[in-house]
Length: 76
Image (cartoon, rainbow, N blue to C red):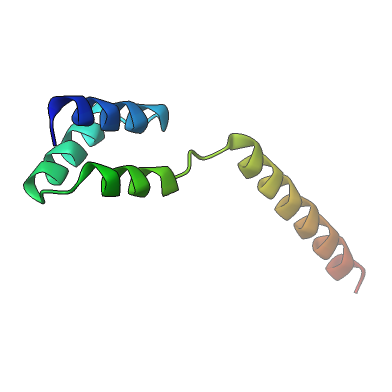
């Protein structure tokens, strides 16, 4: 990979809000393994940034289910 491709990969990784240490280690691993730019881009595009709204919704749903089941078990 040339420097332009490395910079493009770093940019993609930073958009996922990954640490600089992780980005540097990942770039080094790619260079050691002689990974192609196209394959690396496909791999990074499959990664998703964790959406905090989804996590909050899941926690609220689990809390609601636990409250309903707890209330049901308390009436037994």
